Length: 202
Image (tube, rainbow, N blue to C red; front, side):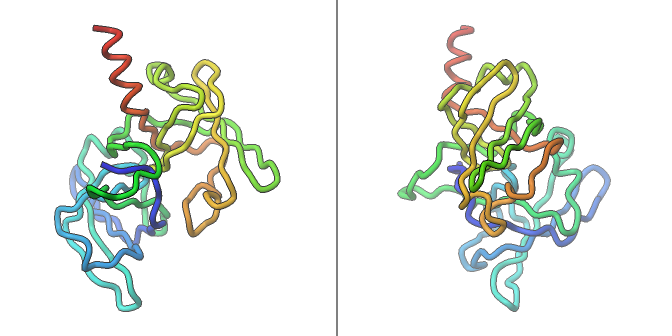
């Protein structure tokens, strides 16, 4: 489980494409002594398992994850290459502060940026989502986009908006400052909304 609070912006340094699996190497500032083989790290909102790691001479960790066929088919992970910057979050520990909302790291769909409005220091993004997932998104509710816990400002059909503060837009905090119209990002809807909808159907 995660909270949607990004704790590092990692950089992909290598991608090994083996048949139907991609082995991806990522540089991060995380202390290697705090990461176990088999640990889960949310990479742009996708929960991936650490399969190997090495301390970096200058500090931090270089770790490897593997993306299976379903992940490659349903997310943007297949497009990652050396130089790609991704939001990272370590898994939640019992007793940690829950600063965002409960996030599983299981991507539901891809949301497309259809508008970006820079409003001085803040920026408003408007997204379009597949119709089947629009019903899970509510004004003032929470969504995870590329692993970032964000509050929905308004909803209009299959579109919704979020407003990002200056801190979130900083390049060393998240990847959001570089996002532009046409980009696709990983969407995870709020788990509570998902279960409420399922109960209503039952």
